[in-house]
Length: 306
Length: 147
Image 1: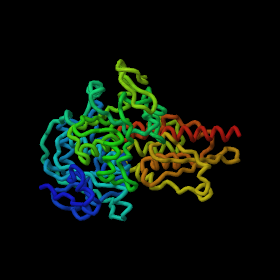
Image 2: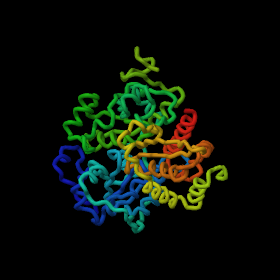
Image 3: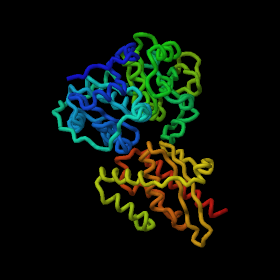
Image 4: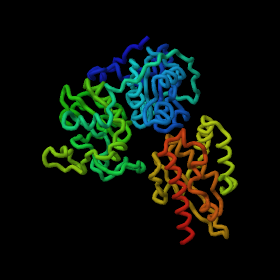
């Protein structure tokens, strides 16, 4: 049932070109059987102001998060959601959204935890589609319910918990994708965003600072492979075979980076630490570092450990 | 709770509360579409507007307090169309408070946004953004009365 990959030339250099589609490809395949387009935004009302024809909305806050536990929905909840959205286990799902696909990448990452095989991101997201003057509609589709199997979430491969991050310190690289001000500890939230309630500012010891937007071109599309390698391999020092953990504030911007490392650069082992700074910055007895240097671990040589 | 709200705002709160959650979001969307445009004199002078930095999307507001005896408050907001939730909140405050006496605006309870029944559907950060909008309005009104 899977749709053919987009053979766009830029994509062919990526490790997994089949994980991206261009706006041209999507426009040509809208309505194809076996395809569901999912819009996932930060703003819960944005989809309702106009969306790609036939697309369904998946809201990260009310639909992917568990209402009580700070966690994602379970296998049954996910199966129910998929059925409502008209997504079958072998459906090709193309995600797009606002803010350069932060939430779209986040939704794609959550689908990955449930092992949904064919997930793809629209390069450039909602903004590019609109900038090209492509069609939007306010009509909401009424998907036919599917029989989606109950698959338990498997967090091991793509998600890191706080204790795993602690154990990872000194063993593998960490990428902090927040703004430089959040990284240094001058502020605990994004510029122009509200204070999110982290008690301390700074970063996880040894983490390299690579703000998520370094992966994006001016128009919100991903940079080509050579440019991405400059940023993540040469500047941030990642090497082939590294076991990488990315984090941000609540795990949405780092999903974007997770996608880049996993699917575009082809790192086998990449995990997103979704607890991110809102957990780490408030946790008892975990080390942090202030300032713009990565710092070192407590008890492992002199370093600016806070 | 709603009893302490001015009638115009109380009516909006009641409209929201009478609906199911999904419909409340639709109502908020309608509000976002009816937010009046910024008058020309402010569009040319963005420096006259105060940014509500607590909002996740850019939102600017300003107000004028009239010289009349009851010191009526006029509210002006600016937020981009790609921020419908923020626009919706601004529009609720506009429709509920615009033109009311300064004292009435100052007496609106700070937790009024919670009364719309959106705290489950809308993230805590966004709710905080709306509370901050109200807080900044009240602060600006108080400052205008002192001047």
